[in-house]
Amino acid sequence: MGDGYSKFRVFGCRLTRAGLFGGGKNFTCALFCLFSFSAVAQYPGYRSISDLPTFKKQFAAQSIAISTITSNFTQEKILSALTEKITSTGKFWFKRSNRVRIEYSEPFFFLMVLNGDKMLFRDDQKENKINVKSNKLFQQINRIVMDCVQGTILDSKDFSFRVFQDDGTLLMEMTPSSKALREFFDTIVLTVEKKDFSVRSIEMNEPLGDVTTISFTHKKLNEPVSDAIFAP
Amino acid sequence: MRFLLLSSVMLLLGCASDYRYLRAIQVDADCVNKIAPRHIQTSWYHAGVDVAGNHISGLLLIKNMPDSSNRVVFTNEAGITFFDFGFSNDGSFVIHSIIRKLNKRPVVRTLRKDFELILALPFGKGSYQSWVEGEEVFLGVKQKNQTAYFIISKDCSSLHRLEWGDARKRKVTVQIIGSGYPAPEKFELIHHTFTMRISLTRFQKE
Image 1 (cartoon, one colour):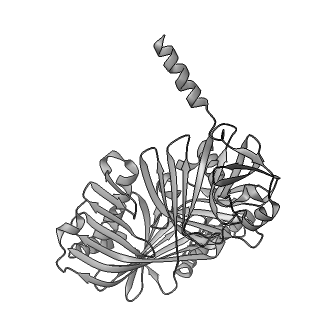
Image 2 (cartoon, helix red, strand yellow):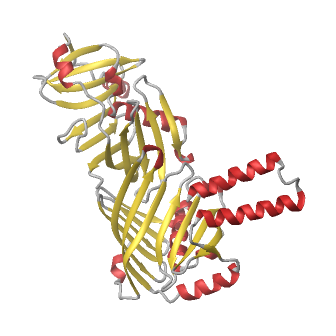
Image 3 (cartoon, rainbow over the protein chains, first blue to last red):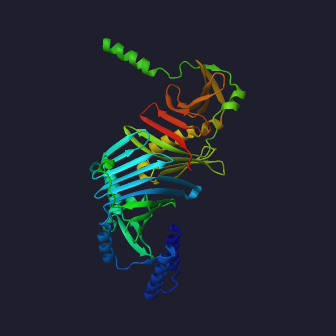
């Protein structure tokens, strides 16, 4: 997905330098056409959603109907320059509001619990408890994870958005606004099921071309989830 | 006066070399050829880093490249890359990427030396010197103002640990735990001059 965007940027640059369309209206028109083509080429089968404000309202209203999620996940990280791939699996729980548990089980153990202002990290050696109020970075991570899960991400000031759809899914391309986040991500692409507004996958594209994709499977929505599993 | 005496004794003890009991011996070339640390094979490790009371964990990839250089990549569990370093056999070092928070000269210098030792790079060049202490033999390669040691059993049957040290002080120790070297089950790297520990536990990726 990163390639399409690069091509657009490269083409855009060439057009500007060569002055192929003589500037003014023609140039703007050509650039617009190129941009539209690029968006479609980047996400084959998807078409752009232009009325973002209406979509935002609809999305927030639908997402709020999800009170709990239990799901398996598979995470795949591709180190593009090294032709290496690492796959990990685990379980994910969400309970409205502001509670998430992400537990990696294979091929290593790692646990992350977010509960309001509290975060817990545990690996096979140690446990760290953090109050996010004391750390801006953790505050931001907490907010982004919660916004993604609770369906409020489109209101986030941390990203600019482009939204696309095909018959079964919505695709939200999030581009970080702040320099701090741009250091880690070129874009984050969220794919959401239209049928129940649950997240199907999260793709994190790093500036040097590495990609991490988290795919959610065996999702159970709105089934009882114990508060105890979110104990920080 | 009593305080002065106590301080002097403490100062003398503090200045005592960690290597004062080493006794120089002839290098056993056959033993060096048999047991000298070799380049780590491509492996994934679950990493824990403890620095000054803080603990971070993540995944560490050591990858042998076709040009015989090595790449060391550290990411967090969620996949975000913290650093990607390149080490060549000729001693050159390349930072392919590093996050701003870690991109400080002392941090990079420390990590570079730590991974050079883990990758056994100092042992590929220079001439060896040898010492004995108790039941262990130290084989060292001098590098500027420090020496890289690998420490083996007296009968040359097992590799115990790797070390960086200067004339007086032991600086860094790498314990090699479990079987399978040059891709052992575990590395424990300990700094002796400040509080830092890196623990690497190998896992099969799929």
